[in-house]
Amino acid sequence: MALTSTLNRFQQIMALITLGTPIAEVLEAIIHAVQAEDPDIACSVYLLDPDTRLLSLAAAPSLPPQYRDSVKQAPMAPDVGSCPSAAYRNQRVICEDILTDPRWEPIRALVADTGLRACWSQPIRGAQGEVLGTFAIYRRRPSTPTRDDVSFLEAAAELASLAIGRVRGEEALREARQSAEAAEAAMRQLAHYDTLTGLSNRAALNERLTARLAAPGDGLALLFIDLDGFKQVNDIRGHRVGDELLRQVAGRLRGICNGPDIDIG
Image (cartoon, rainbow, N blue to C red):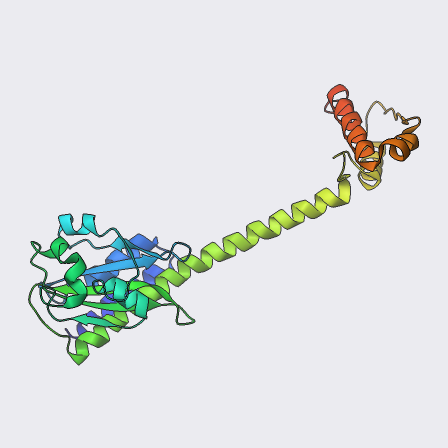
C-alpha cells in the first residue's frame, strides 16, 4: 500500500473531523480510505471504554458479518488475538498467520470460516500516549507488513486518534459546563435559601421586596410570625428536635402559602 495515493482521502477525513462529523462516520471513512488501496484487506476499529476497560467494535464494515457479530466486545488481554493484545501492551501486534499464531488459539474458532488469515493491529493513542482503542488491518492470506504498510497503519490510527480526541474533548467541555452550571446553581441556592428549611433567606427577601416596591401594582402585604418558646425546645429536646420542628413549620407554611405571588422566608 502506498501513502501518497490516499493523501487526498486523508485530507478529506481531516475536514470531516474539523467539521464535527459524528465519530462513527469518521471512523468508517478512515476504513474506506485504507481499504480503497487493496481489495484484499478489511479493517476494524475498536474503542476502549476508560471505565470498564473493555474494547467495543466501533467500525468494521467489511469484516464477515458472523465474525463481526461475535467480536463486538472484548477485554484487553496480553495474548488473545491481535487487537486485545495490542491494547493491553500498547504496542503494535503483527499476526502473520491467524491459523498458526498462538495468540489466536483462544479465539481461533471464531475466525476459522471467514477466510481471514493475517491481522495487524495498531494501538490508537491519545495525547499522553494512553490507549484509546485499536486500528486493525486483516488480510485474506498470510502476510507481514512492509515499511509502507506500517506507515499506512500508523497514519490511519493517528487519524482515528484525532477524531476520538475531538469527540472526547467536546464531551469533557460539555461536562465542565454542566459542572459549572451546577456549581452556580448551588451558589445561588446557598445565597438565597436557608439550608435547613429551604425557605428564602433575608438576602432573597430583601431582593424581592425591593423589586416588588419598584414595580407597578396594587401594593403588597408583609406578615411576620414568631415561634414562641422555640429556645426551650432546643434547650430541653436538643437542637436535632429543634431543627426538625423548623422543617415541619416550613413545610406547613409552604402548604398554606402556595400562591404565585407569595414569597416565604
